[in-house]
Image (cartoon, rainbow, N blue to C red; front, top):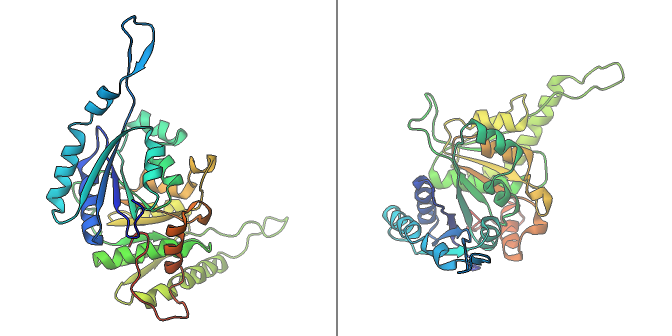
Length: 326
């Protein structure tokens, strides 16, 4: 799984939504790469004949997956019959397994469900498996929420991307522009901004117009080179006066895909993988791609490929190059 092209890796579980496998298979076919299906099975325990000593029951653990993987493979083949598909079931904790399979992958695809209120409240306080995987994966992570039965009135297919003022925004924009070009849809770039804090001890704030103009300059500067590289992708900009996460969730209503960056990598910070990223993943009702932008935790081959994307206006003529996903 460490080849240059890399597979699209999709995680399936006992209650996996078929839309996750469908989306991953279609993406692998569009990218012309292989697909790898992973199932992490929990270790089951039994007792010895004396009933005193717990014993790991590997056979029962693996037998529990006999219907899961064949069904997922069959569904993927029905969506994309022309791609290479492999599958594995491993008795291992889910988060470490998926983080390891993400190394060298083009894209990691996870399913997600809209929990009832008690569980939704719990998910705010305790990070889910998807939260923890997205915070430490070395490749972009797509989280597929259950899709609405009908598109919101007035919405149109588009890719929505959140743009901040950091130097790592190019990696996020690279994924977003490639996705929009691949789908043949426009791109909406969102940069939420807030009015300046008090400028002096008399509680006088800076003018809102100045803050908005600075936000506009940040967004235009971020997009200029990508507009040149992707002239066929229509680009719309949004500068809502709102918290970035809230602005992105609102603009993503009815979108085909939302793309957001994630700077928190490794250790405990990966558990809470970024307030904006986590907020968007939990609330947006369309597929979301979380793009890692912390170079320290990215393996060498992924980092080198990312370098090809982050400078679209380099000194040498642009040539067709593949991003880690796109």
